[in-house]
Image 1 (cartoon, one colour):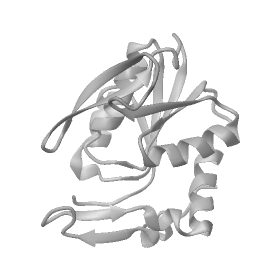
Image 2 (image 1 turned 45 degrees about the horizontal axis):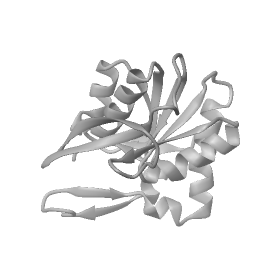
Image 3 (image 1 turned 120 degrees about the vertical axis):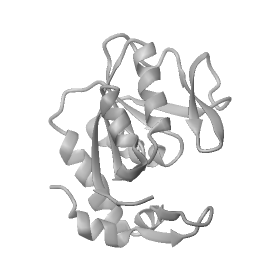
Length: 180
């Protein structure tokens, strides 16, 4: 069973004008702080993927780690960490991506994904899509298939979900907020 979208949206705190004027920041920490909502969110993802054939869960730094580890554990799938540059100890492969004011690099251990691996990508939200697109590119560089990107929420007006779909990665989200 998937959590009711309107109920979920009512549990997400909106912080106006943060981190800059005009931005309506959608704060998911309220979900993590409420055990009932947190369980319903995670159960929604687990129920969605319990009967899906895939190989690995790819969790994105940092809130994606919280979600990905639970999905990985519940579905008995290996967990692959996608981290900011310089945070992984073994040999990595990296992908640069655009930020609002510059660029960043996402890395993954080069031996964590094998040719043919079907990888579920997990993050808290889809905004511009830069981080998830970088992770999907890394999966492809290593010969895998990023079959879906899942998130608690989507901000479709920022275009990330459309960019992911255009790049060949399906998306799943529990709720969406219009506007930026």
